[in-house]
Length: 203
Image (cartoon, rainbow, N blue to C red; front, side, top):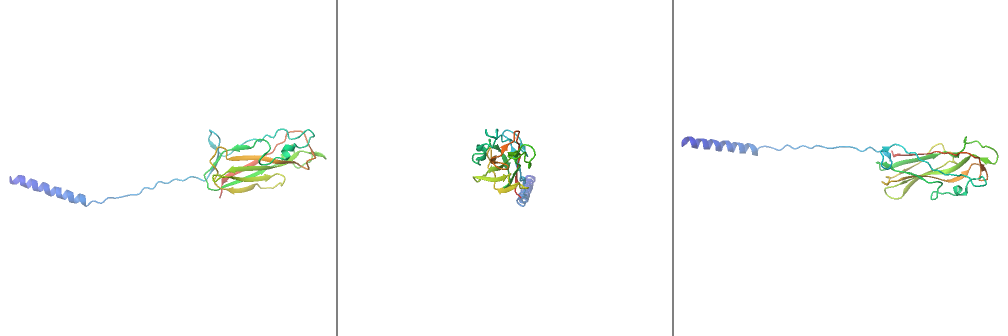
């Protein structure tokens, strides 16, 4: 009987020590941070396609002259709202809060620019090139370039966030004018011009 009591007492003592040790433990805490970043970028996203850094398109004007050989009146009186040909549209996504847009163009020409083919004739047509971007806050940001000025640098503007829409960039050509005067006859042949635009995160 005495041995049994001794064993019970020893067990009770061990249990008390274990309980005392558990109550004396502390909890260690830690903090783990999760980080990442999004680069300020602008990318062209074609419908159903992957993102790329450029786009290419055409504004087809068709016949430039009327029956008397001068520039077609519809091109001379064209405006941003009623431009020549079908405007080119694309989708550009930008992650930055502000975006820098720029545009430049050369004259619509048949052959070498800056040289008159003969008195009373013309092989160049000046016009206004325009890029319009839809903005997330509503409205549009617009930048234009007139080839008549012959500026060496592109015209630029800084706008806010671009709208997340399927066609948020539109490029137009309008306000055509025969080099040297509207009475000049246009020389027969193919005429071409290039509008160069850029869209990038603003510094």
